[in-house]
Length: 243
Image (cartoon, rainbow, N blue to C red; front, side, top):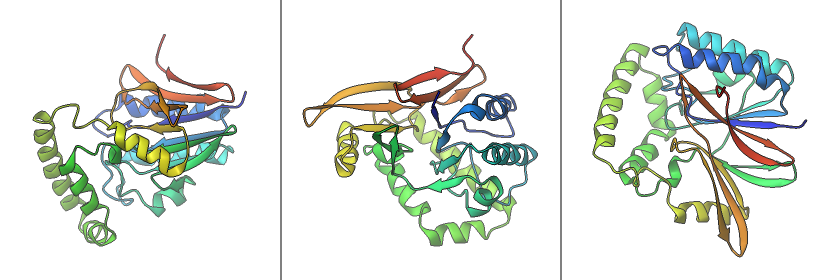
């Protein structure tokens, strides 16, 4: 059966071994039987450059390459945690980097893919930060620093972000309906797939007198791994670890 899978927000890190193991098992088993795998951002909890040689990252790169070598294409979209992932990583894994937003034809139906952070238009502070760090000059200067210094800077940024998150309402950090509608209307489509918010759900709503859908991917935990499975018959959310 034809099937395409979508994942996001795994936040893989050397500090938590179980979730990377779930991902490696997924790449070696379920993912081998599909048409394509789309990773819509935040595969890693933080990515400080393609020169980071953490052992678990090397293992993941090998597993991704093994999957692409088996004939399953992998498409990778940057998230807010791994936007520094670059062409060296893509070359080693044979993953194809895609822009955000990205339009695909999924079994005859056009779908818009996004990470989802730009849909959270009420989070003005984050969007200003995003605009700054996505500039090529900022990234060039940051990546020119020693890896140890990059880790220190990233830790400070993360600490400040966590403090801000504790005082920010969940509504501000969620997508706005206006941003969703604008994104769909700009591309002239009625299906949107995104992650970022960690609120897995399938939303159905009216748009220009037609039914539209917003598929929200879920984050991964030690006991839960949410993916979106799409076939010619439709899309559904699945927990890989459900018994």
